[in-house]
Image (cartoon, rainbow over all chains, first blue to last red; front, side):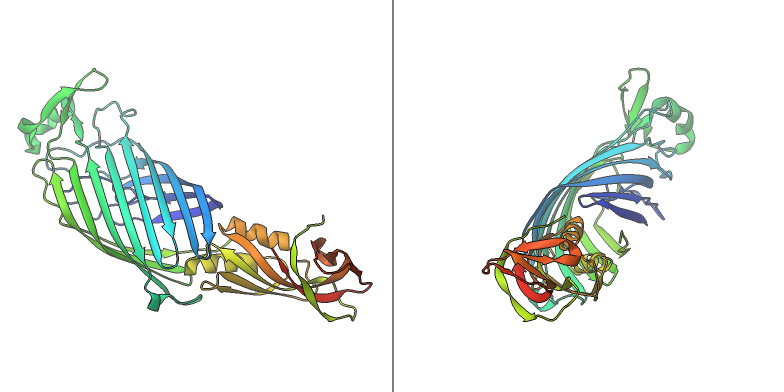
Length: 262
Length: 135
């Protein structure tokens, strides 16, 4: 997945970000949140971050807590083997994160919930809601504790947990396509939709739970930041016949514009 | 508008020849600077303030060292505001400025800012250069 993202520091404690991830090859994985500030689905997301707690406790030391609120709309359909792509509706996302930061250590914990709506197209397809939790411990070794302006390298150990609900599909739409889809309709649970107007099929090969953990790093120099990491699966309980997600890897490049008023 | 600050230490008077009133140098402690990008951001932001000649940020000391151009109209209040807007907290500072003593105040005339001083009351008719600490 590739995810361009633009963030703008609007006020001291207010930031707005726009990201638009898209899949190059989705594979067969549960669809949850990619990170606290980035969707895991191909959708355009606007995210407002409000740092409501910001205590500067000393030289190079601070405690902070941030509330995130975002909304997004689908930009790309994800293929499924059990039928046509789901017609996913826009979603809302809320998260809370807190961190302690110093020159030597970094500690943060957070959780976010993403909820997909069912209100616009008249179809009852529903993408799974998801919960993402994260704990990050960071360390800057003394021998890398250089003064500005030198490259700044920090190492982290990240552990994430996600819980993704089962998606469901409009039963009437499935009935017309199931013959050619070769899917798993016979395995599906059928239940009444929230509106009570029609039935939906809960997709057995969707959603699940998992915990991932591993090392990452962040290197900043001048206006650039490079980050990368490799998280392995500690626990993977995917619903149905979805393949196990054995690892997660990320590579990120950021450029910072230090513009502003005179 | 006059801005009053506590001056913990009376300044070292370096001369009594007539000078333009202005800030010359500010060494300020800043809380919260913990990364290279933080330093770069606050440095770039201060650099855009009127009259700033150079900015030197130290992450290890948690400080910014600002040299100012001659004839500037720089204000300490603008500096503190700029640091706050970048998400950091300005703390005590060692200031070198040209101004006039007026009773228990040292007035940096070009800026409209003045500082309470703990030295005996004095009055100077001509601007003098002084270095003092501001909390």
